[in-house]
Length: 81
Picture 1 (cartoon, rainbow, N blue to C red):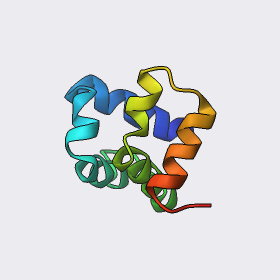
Picture 2 (cartoon, helix red, strand yellow):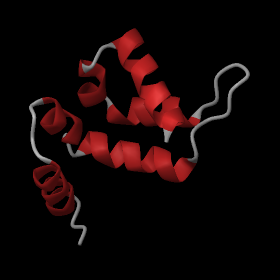
Picture 3 (cartoon, helix red, strand yellow):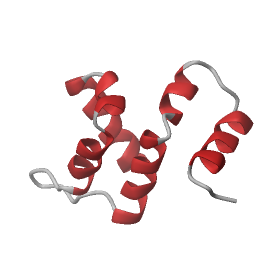
């Protein structure tokens, strides 16, 4: 999981937090594409990041929503039970 966290920190630092909402698929493409001397993020985890960004969960977390509210939102937004 640290690899995903490190990627997102670096991505936000370089591109700004707003880019996560503006183009989630670009974030996904960047996360699965390995950088110099690095491996890309495992596709399964990269897809979870994409779903999270598409559901705007990162915006809810930034606004201080609870974990229960966030999980409920993801489940309803993506028809997950």
